[in-house]
Length: 437
Image (cartoon, rainbow, N blue to C red; front, side):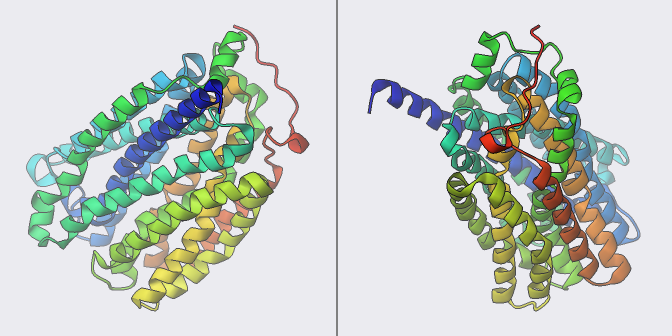
């Protein structure tokens, strides 16, 4: 292997590791909030005479973080396309870590009254702004360092970071949930949020050693960097942004329902203990860690578009299978339900980086990816737990919830048929002229 190839491989490896660690930390923080919103925050920050109302308010606070993401997408997308991916990603990582640490030291409603939920929601908004600028940049740092024929695989590696973050958050909360409820609500719930400070320090030093994206460097050298990337995206790539937002619904709804709402459905819908569903979810997440890179590698051989469309079609049906197996209340069958559901999700989410990022020219890629992705998360992830909880409360069963999930996947399937990545010569969109600023 030549010195040049070795150097390129080292840069690619550093980019993958840095993006993966950063994404893992961001999703650890997000998953920690989701777990606490499902099972802990209601009595601490949203006390109500009706427990269902308290749970809905707590889940709504989880949704607020998603609503804040477009702000991060616009702000950090602008700087990611103006000053570079690396510096922008350093800022988003620190912002998320600070917000999560502060949640761990917040006073509760009993201590400061209405100020408690206000402070909690403020921290959640900061989390949302951070993640809004994180995901698109992390994807691009990896995909833009990879050879075009391997972007499916390397992009999928970054996406395992979201699952690794979920797994770490679940592991952090598992001992918390085994404590007596008084101790859990008194002090133990704070520990997983405080741990975030250690993770952020590690992530900061890893990301600092990464080189800037070669695609951005070439765009900057060629004078293609736009003064206002968002204006150019909306002017030339608006249709692509809308299609991307709709195409991500299947993965977004599936991940949030599987990782967040399932923990509420366990006690509320199945009458299980608070930690029973978590014990099923934890081993099932290993499926995602294995299947996402496997489907990413497969996509490099058979095409990212084909894998995306087939997996979206599977997610139209799999929610019904998942709920039916959960309803048995038998551990083995419940685990099988999660495994089947997560296989479909893994195939779909694995190809998102390569499939979506190449729909935009490099000079507008951070902004276009971030806005489209975060808009889709508002439509999908943000309100999915609250919608599901409302359906369960009004119907008493899971069929309406599964219908909602399958409908979201159908929308993704339709949108995906019209979304053509520019990395596929057969689907090459018309070139976009980006004014030189």
